[in-house]
Amino acid sequence: MGTLIIMKKLTYTEAVAELEQILAELENNSEVNMDIISEKVKRAAVLMEFCKKQLHELDEELEKMLEHLD
Image 1: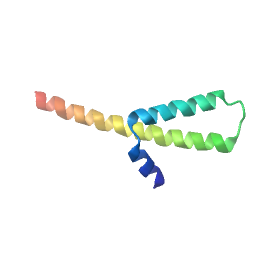
Image 2 (image 1 turned 135 degrees about the vertical axis):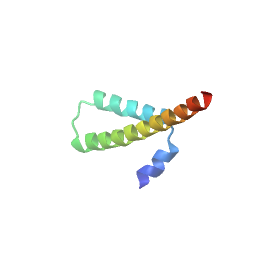
Image 3 (image 1 turned 30 degrees about the vertical axis):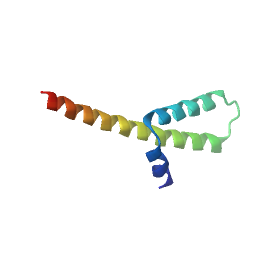
């Protein structure tokens, strides 16, 4: 439930930036700490789902706008 609250405060741009940061951290970290990797992968999955939802909602809005133009 706490994740939903955090996600509602995020913008799409902030979520993408955080995903890029997670990727960079994973790529540049030579230490293999499975707990840290697991947490970062879980957070990345939440962020990707958030971004996917945002894009889907935008697509629906654009479709509605295009329908009104016809």
